[in-house]
Length: 344
Ligand SMILES: [Zn+2]
Ligand SMILES: [Zn+2]
Image 1: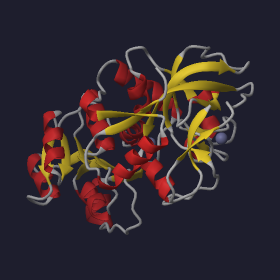
Image 2: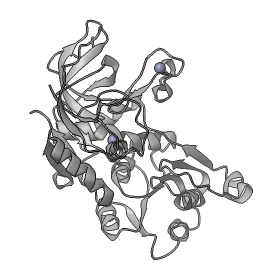
Image 3: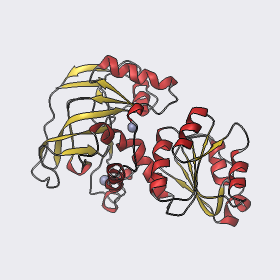
């Protein structure tokens, strides 16, 4: 089969002819229909993330059809449309048995630690595939499995619920999904903090109250908009100590700040006045859980989570096109997602 692989860090991906994987009793072989090209793939190619196993086929945002199912697999069968949870996990360690497979002792990121979806076929454990309803295209089914799933996990970790207010710092891919999902939770006001005018306009057009962080301190603006109270939940999706601190300062009594963006900076908090006396919480968020995916798929099936067609671009399973798309991440500021159409 054809695959587009990382053979050397810092070098363009290369096309290769490789064997179709053999599956075991608990695996499935998926014929890839679509695979999203993610910013983290660019980090893998550039060597910003450590790559232990080369060559490796990249791609962790995958949807397709079941080609073959191992004898132990009961929940899907040949021909079923599926999307794939990107963390292959053992299912039996102390984390997996409690549904916390993100910490699995032997977890492997698909498209990093093991071959991913920039290929005609992929082998994954059967527990990693989820039925994809006909109403959701393969392209959407693929890209949902990364940033949208993590946006939902952030809302879940923050215990966000109907009737609560929320502020979202950063309106990139995660924010785009987080705003729609927050609204699907039947929330109160949603604020989006950004400095990019196009993103502010886009957030406002999707029902958010846009907070332009260039015009005034976003914390002051949110305090003013909430009559001094603050919000119930703040999501930090940027990865900066400054906006993480602002997320905490926006909180009202019993507020929760969920930190998703990555940074190595130190964040300062005044424990008594900024956290303790309002019983606020700061919550770390990493990836998402398989158990959350059926709910996410339902949000997309019911139209509550959408990706406008002008937000998607398509390329072929072609090393040159994929490399060009990865190059584009270095200067991209929009919501445009590129998806490899492998088969239809
Ligand atoms: Zn991704
Ligand atoms: Zn495990």
